[in-house]
Length: 224
Length: 88
Image 1 (cartoon, each protein chain N blue to C red):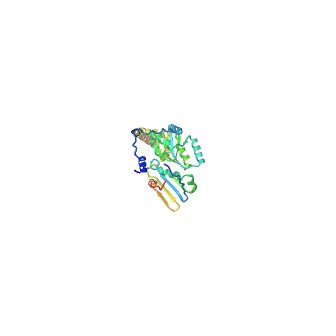
Image 2 (cartoon, helix red, strand yellow):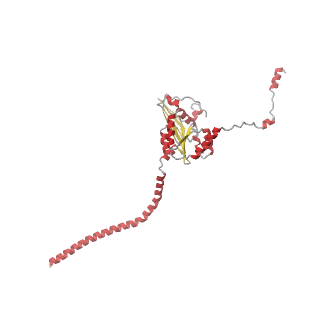
Image 3 (cartoon, chains in turn blue, red):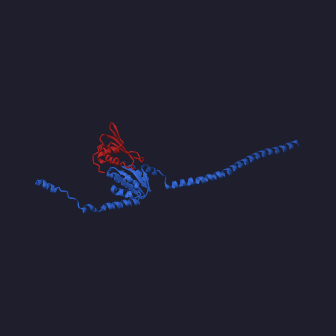
């Protein structure tokens, strides 16, 4: 064989892998978790735990002055504006009870969170900022859509609702009382009417009788 | 999903109406488009262009309605256009 061909054949000779290399898996370097990611995850957990109202909005570009004004107005009602990266929020949501909010966390979002439920005020402030679009909310452990939030804001206060419920419940009982008493009340009214008629009729006959009685003595006196 | 930062120019656009249901899983591209249309440069290119967003919860497909100066263009199958590379 020619020398060059011999060299080429020697270099390109197949070397079978040794059995140890085949069986033992390659050890991947363990990447330590970023401390900032841990902090963000802790903040997300705390936010979702402590808030009764969580609104998720699409965040389009907003000038900084408008953003500042909006944050200030919301802060007056104890509503906080939070920004979290989707990579941190999505794993947390997938294992928590807020699983159904997962589709909302796509793209650029912001969260409006509050320990109190102030839906009407939040909607009023968001109306003035057209760049922020409300996508959905979780109010009092109930997931609501945009229309659901609007309907929720139109609900009356708890006291009025409780009064309405009490009124509805007592309506049946009052109707039953009315029905039971209706016949006796009607009878009483009819009897009253009858007595009045009788007394007025007796009064008329009495007057007529008195008139006759007066006439008779007058006649008798006249006759005498 | 990496999106190329192409500049959106709204010079000949009269209005853009975007309607989507955020609880569906196929609205990512629509929302990214909305973000691009509302960007600082896009807004600066045409101040008179009106961008309206309609957020619904009726399971309907996302709709992008673009009104140019003369003609109107409706984009219904946003997802298929994205796959063909004609949309963001």
